[in-house]
Image (cartoon, rainbow, N blue to C red; front, top):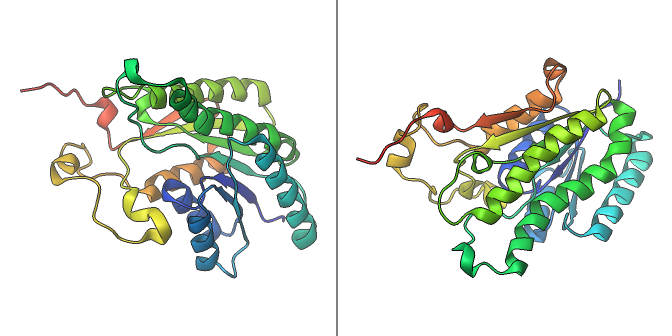
Length: 258
């Protein structure tokens, strides 16, 4: 049986890194694409003997994506004599959701959010589809609960993540039955301490932030990684075109100001 291969964008930090680690530990081969060269080097150093290909790639750049997939194909054929992909995780994108008041938002900054999330997902999906078809693989898009609800001054991020949800169900219909496509909407996830080889810095969130969640805690990257692994598995074989909120129940909680 061929060892499964996953492609994870933004795969060297935060949710992407946790997903890379989980799949490696479960016996997958992983190609991790990330534009942060330092994070890529740290990931590579942490898994020197693993079946990992870590690459510095800006997924919003068409040429870089093309070159990355060409390199990945050569790596597969040289080391494993195989072709095709089992999973694409479109996770890369600007993490900061706040763009400031809409009347002050420049077109250049608006495009930065759209290109990093939406254009990057499009370019990587387009490149991966032939290989995913070959193995009847899956795509998981990492959206956000901000595609479903908002705080002030997050229009750029919300629009990009909302676009990912729409692209998810459109792709599911276009690519089925060979390829399943789903999305995950993370809520508040404590990603800060997971940056740069999981260096444990001070947490991003306060005790009051944790207590307001119905589950009594903030999410961790591992919570999202586990959902990715489920959606990529045969257990999710009848699930496509859907989005799953991984948010500790916050999108279902009524909140009124005192």
